[in-house]
Image 1 (cartoon, helix red, strand yellow):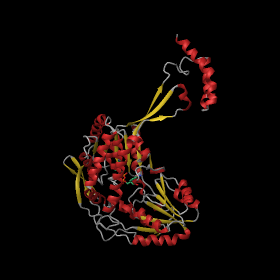
Image 2: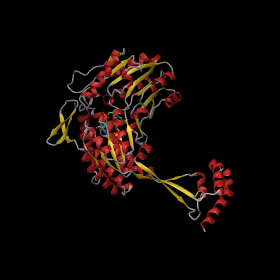
Image 3: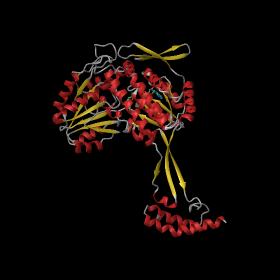
Image 4: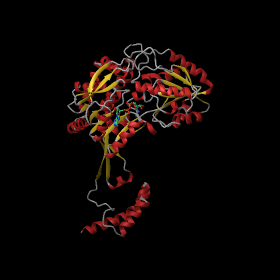
Amino acid sequence: MSSVLSASDSEQEIVSRNPATGEAIGVVRLHSSSEVTSAVEAARDAFATWKESTFSERARIVMSAREVIISEMDDIAALITNEVGKPMAEAISTEIVPALDLMQYFARSAKDMLKPKKIDIGLTALMGRTSRIIYRPLGVVGIIPAWNYPFTIPIGEAAMALMAGNTVVIKPSELTPLVGMRIAEIFRKAGLPENVLQVITGDGSTGAAMVEAKPDKIMFTGSVATGKKVAQAAAKNLVPYVLELGGKDPMVVFADANLENAADAAVWGAFCNSGQTCASVERLYVEESIADEFTAMIVERTKRLRQGLGADESTDIGSMISENQLAIVESHVNSFRQEGAEILTGGRRNPAFTGSFFEPTVITGAVNSMRGMREETFGPTLPICRFNTEDEAVALANDTEFGLCASVWSSDLHKARRVAERIEAGTVTINEVMYTHGISQTPWGGVKNSGVGRTHGDEGLKELTSAQHIHINHFGFIPDVWWLPYSPKALKAFKALAKYFASGSLIKASLVAPTFLKRLFELRKKRK
Ligand code: NAD
């Protein structure tokens, strides 16, 4: 295991290990549930002041945190590499770059995105009413991330939550606590007031304690199984949540696609971070007429990949996070073999290393009934399956419990769009794979078992607010026709409301005027 628990006196600790070497790289506290409750309470106290801060004060701190990241970039990237095993190149390209971009985007845009919004209330406005929505901060946002992107996901969600006026408690994965603690350090250096953002290290029990501590929102990223537990526990106290869960993303390649680009994308999409990305390409469907040629292109590219220590600048594929994760991949690959698929390259633990390295693996002859095509593998495997028609491609892509992302590859954009719109997924990219979590302006999230709710974009920012409706009656001196007491005239007025006013048509609504006036006079008279 890359991290182990040990007891020292009454306190428990987590030893964080480099999964590529097994070397211990740090020790952190495993916080108790009472400490988690105290952290959430401290965050609630801090909220009283932080919610009153202006958008420019919040933006100044988020932008300062960016500066800290930029000045410490090499060191942060090295820490991510040491704790996750991914290449330094990916620590920068897929963790630091998107975090920096998200932070500047929400620092600059949150004020405008959350400005009060006037609502068109239709014919009700004729009665002298107006409605506005204001976006209030929720309170304490509890962030429970996975280990695979231990920097960009929690720091991005934290930056959005802070910009919306919330305070934050992050419970990092037990496999990547040091990266989590670094996030707290970055915001401390940026001048964030005490307890506005806290990082509380621990394992699943600490995450469960966070949910029990009743924060005002849970932003959870992890497996479907844990996501369901979080949802059940949160439901007890009606704590709202966003669940960003697993995927089994399909890549559909038509014969008219740019095959060079599609092959490069498939290899990056399947093997980046050793395949441990929620939006990894986990199923490749290729049109029969080009299947042999395309498969050969992928195998040739895969064989060229250099596997090694993440710290080595020319490493393409690093280690996996843990022996547990590697064992799942091994078991899926063995299932593929037993169920009749063929391993074209890879297919085994890399014997050149002692750490958790699995060779990038290309599999052909895969069909959807195979275990490795149904369960999330979360490792460096690329199973390839063939299709003949557009309808078949859509049916194969949708034949899964997951619905996070998908991609469609074709030079016919009309066809690609048509297919994309038929695929059940939170995001479908055309002639592109996987990277849109890095576009902070666009919503991210899944359908089916891939999750609930959204992060990023307008939808994601608003998840971190409560939409409060402020309604004004500008004719406050006139009673409403629907108030008590009721009478035959009231009933007549209500029937007119049903028949004419509720039609939404101004012309029809004008027909309510006589019954309305009679009813108003009646109400005024009854007041005397
Ligand atoms: P996991 O479910 O094992 O753990 C996720 C987090 O939940 C960890 O911090 C863990 O300590 C915590 N946790 C465990 N039990 C808990 C409980 N009962 N209550 C509250 N918290 C608890 O997942 P993982 O192995 O860390 O991550 C891998 C999974 O994450 C994959 O399925 C991957 O697809 C998914 N993921 C999804 C996205 C996305 O955006 N959809 C992004 C990254 C990862």
